[in-house]
Length: 454
Ligand code: PLP
Image (tube, rainbow, N blue to C red; front, side, top):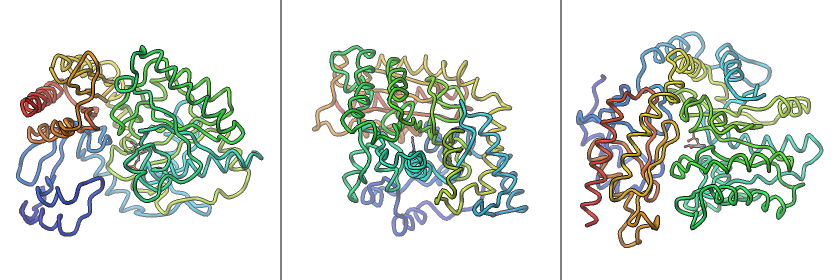
């Protein structure tokens, strides 16, 4: 490991010059950032030498685990051969070509084309422009509205944040942009009332049909959703939800955009969440696990039909300098090879996913936990003061999830919270022993939170 300045110096410079994403800067300046200097497998080491179990795979991205030397070597070799070349104006290069072909092989259905970006946000911006352009090419320029869901996360750029349904993001900077409508989320635990999960799932799906009728079917271009809402709190929809949504999209001639930024590349036990939930997307957003976060790269996987229509209409006036960046593409391809040759995805489906499911479920015995759910290697705990009523904590108890997140952090476990939902998504390489350790630390964080509340 390379030498670094002392923790105090790093924290002082960080506070003075570094404006962090989604961070309370005043609180950070007071506490000082925890500075991470090393990663290995599911473990992170901070600048004081303390090891932490990374229950979030960084930001849901480090699917093959931290710091695999093979990927460092691929990046170095590619930088020596061709560190940058663009993909505009009738040029291409081997890594972008090979990765596109591999993605076409892996993606479900006829998603045989990729438009590259450097992130999930950019890819969703591409999707907004692409679906509107597609309908215009088909002689239906009035089909512009994209329907999304409350509490969805599709990114942080102006377009993708507008597409999302995060109230806190829309409260700043005059968002959302026009042309985006939203329906409710399939969050049975918090919003299902007295309905069964199945009835609630259907009712929430039918909101899509109501929205289409309200807006006018001739004006609706697409519906976008994550198979399992990630940043919204790992909201796993009831079984009845997706079949109903799929039928409604087909009946009303709108495109289905499935945002697989978190659920892609093995997270749910298949290459894509679309396979886990039997979805037939017209466009799929990818990023994060595509390179396991080793290089910034994302993209939109696009159906033959859309690619044909748009391709025949001349230039799609859109692109990013780093679309198909050679180093990022080479690293992504090597990452997909590791996922494949090490059988990491069947392992999630058949072994480590069910193992996490069983052990995580045991946390439902904790007095604070109302429900423990998993889908592959994504997991959530709904915290509640009253299990029978699925009640929320009173406002004067503070955000209990935040207390629990801080207790987990103090016990060297990265576990996130969304309100009073605790969430994890560890690397796909996690072992049974490491799952047991994760559960032990999560349980300790819950116990300490419980003690603070009493
Ligand atoms: N879509 C989903 C479902 C995400 O979870 C995220 C990020 O967490 C994004 C899009 C945005 O991706 P990025 O942060 O790479 O821009």
